[in-house]
Length: 381
Image (cartoon, rainbow, N blue to C red; front, side, top):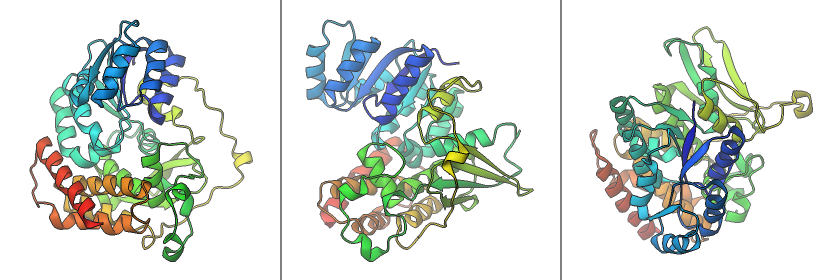
């Protein structure tokens, strides 16, 4: 069981909730990292007194060093400082809650340092799934999912000795704020519209991904790596209430589902306490109060990012990394009002045309692909 944790991405939604769980469970906090939110990480340092902290933005790191000079916490700077925190002595578990591809190198660093990895960063597996799995095997360490959907699948598989009897995985999706809209209706939606998620409180990038359903495409790729199933064995169903977090179907057509209130502290806590369960800060699920559970097929024409992700994992190699990088850049451009919502899928798909078709690749290849694709997306608008 976890006793001391490092939180990579501590100022984001998952990071803040992870600290809430850590405080409740009495865990020590060894290290904290963020990008450049000096105010929040200073508050966290003063409350949890980690040995190390790091900001990937070097200017912000210098500011933080001055602010917390009286605390005894050593402040590191840049991506290298974040990776040093990922490998920090004293922590047995690292929670990777960094947003985007920036979470890949810290994840690999934590694994190579022998830490159990609680993974809330989708992009690490999407872009570098093969490399992450090889590192886990080489270092004989565990990786536990924090995403609510993958935690649900993980829980539904408990008690099944192998996945040989597993027929399919069913990922549930809320449908986001644009469920039921036509492409014509989506033509003029804004980032402010897309940020109004009906069920979950998340950061801006992932909320936009949820609105486009690219997030669910990322989860499909992640599930492929986490549970060693073919993409064809992964279905997606829209479940507006976000009460069933995902399901598995076995060969006898029995379906096992995991239910709970839409609160990330449930899967965060389970990743830290597995295989044991403890009382949760989250309330009980009252099905009578929920009233009904509904299910719909996704609209693959309106939400074209789903098929882009299916195509990417079907091609394999660097293609998942490429479409992920294309999405990160397009997502940013949409949030800044520089492109329209329907431009997301159009721009992301162009990444296929510039991605080298290779089966073997390195971390350096992933980041070179990231650089090329981001430049391409910017030049395409």
